[in-house]
Amino acid sequence: GFSGCLSSVVSQPADSVLTYVAQQTGGGGKGSLGVIEGCKIMIEREGPGSLYRGLGSRCLWAGSIIAGQFLLYDVFRTMFGVNRDDLSQVFEVIISNQDSIIS
Image (cartoon, rainbow, N blue to C red; front, side):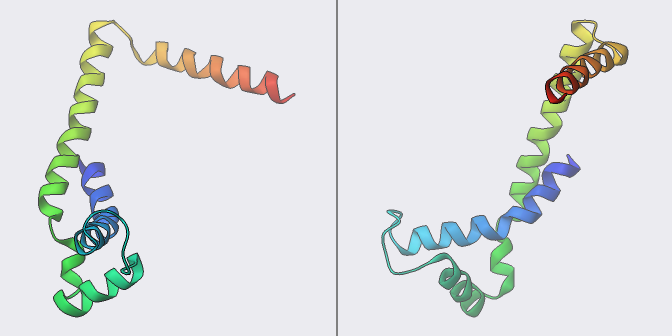
């Protein structure tokens, strides 16, 4: 959950600017408003907080998705009887194969 929220905090400003630019240019990507100019306009007109508009719902969504992925991973791992030793053997095979390819 935390990793999903953290990734949302990092990527939210870019998504907000892209959404703003798309709305201003009609969504077709053709227009005179660029991403940097759109960012400047957003900050001038609405303040720096506008870059994080919708962050709460996005954190909730991303955190839920990633937590659900870990839950499914654990459920299937348990259902198929895969334990930590099985996974380390897989990693050893992958590493030894890479070593033989490199040398």
